[in-house]
Length: 456
Ligand code: MN
Image (tube, rainbow, N blue to C red; front, side, top):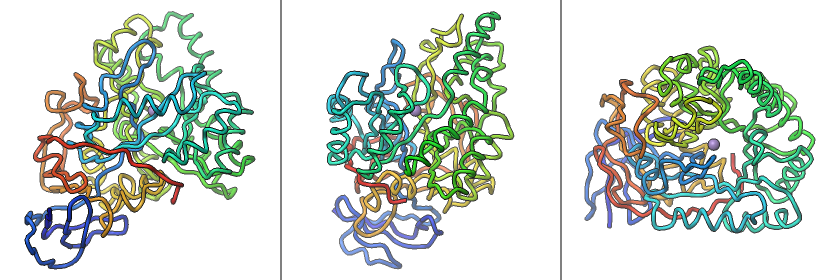
């Protein structure tokens, strides 16, 4: 089967060029000017941008947290992803303490297999350390799981510092890389106890008990450990201006640091927590919390100048009924926001259309950099001969409004309700197959994508 995408402007991290793309079966066969149709089905892409399929390096589908389970599983989450141009997600496999990594990976492969409509890989959470896990890290690398997650907060998942160092050293040997959730756990606990003792139980206490300096402190702390361990690391969901300063300091010392941020930190601000209506405020509870306007502006600036390498969603959706669990205690609100469906649209609308970033920047942070960072380049993340034919046909002239009533995410709200958007998606191809068209998601079958070492 051959498809010729004719007359579009192909976007890469270095610019935009008018080129045709010829797809044969699952891969891109040729990219060039005025390609002959041969027997191919011709799709007119005049006036359209052609992006590589977006990669979301941070999702939580089908995850149990605090006695409840995320509203999106791999079936609904992947369909929402495709509707928004995301053709691959890297989800977090999370074994419980005491489990082997193999058991954790097996569980996540079962959750995704036969259900995920988009392609997928897994990061592996390391929440425990012993000889067995050390050995298993090599097996994970062999099975195409090359990135690992550690937490500096959440008692159920935290590792002692000595063990974090041991993990970093072991990853250095194997060529794996760690992404770390950076927040100072001890002080957050103390601030939380203080808020509760004062009877401040509303969602407004959430950002106040997790202030930016406690993220920045943990970022600095991690980066000093990484300096001694002599390894690159990834700061996931960086949200604060002060955290960027810690990253800059480490880079000045000569360290390699990769930074991810999320659309909600780029688009929203912390006044959302002051809404007197419980659910209106609770629906924005996530960690780190949404920050101040100055933080948001600092993140855009860092995105533009290349200090932030990737934008992922940290999609972790809960319905309003689930959020209600924290009605009388903000610490019981399940933390996380839906977003896997809207990332491209948000970044284009608030970034490209507003002149804050270019189309090439958008391609770098949504496609090229995640593919390189997570070791699946050039199979993913670029529109080049031999690459998977994951293609987003983007209409820069489209306009729309984000509403909960018009989304494939299996959740009854969106943090971006009523937001007017610019740009939109005509078609999404997953390995050559039409996966979404004009907001309609078709039936596709995602595959596990084994990944190698970081190439960024
Ligand atoms: Mn997360």
